[in-house]
Length: 109
Image 1 (cartoon, one colour):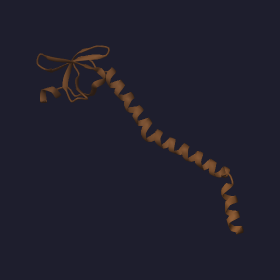
Image 2 (tube, one colour; image 1 turned 180 degrees about the vertical axis):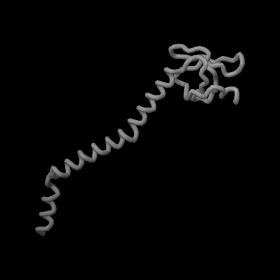
Image 3 (cartoon, rainbow, N blue to C red; image 1 turned 135 degrees about the vertical axis):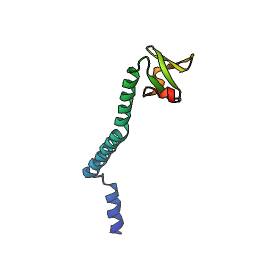
Image 4 (cartoon, rainbow, N blue to C red; image 1 turned 45 degrees about the vertical axis):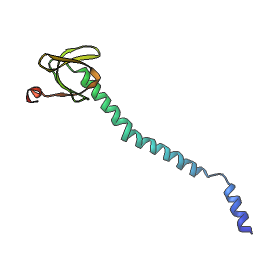
């Protein structure tokens, strides 16, 4: 009978400070893992894409995220004009540019 009373009293006891510290430490480690595996690489990709978009100039051959290959004929603040075929020009948002291709890519396509 004394065993059950001892167990009940032990269950009512507050968690030790060591357990609290371990819980806080686990949260900090979890946040650090998320930061280095998810947040930081995404911020790096966003920064690289922004630099790529700002560096686009007339005459560059680019591919959009939609897969359209074209030559930049005019650059504006938010839009660029792409010549996708002879005398066929489309206007796309600068942010939709996925990659700048090497010169001569359109001749091969």
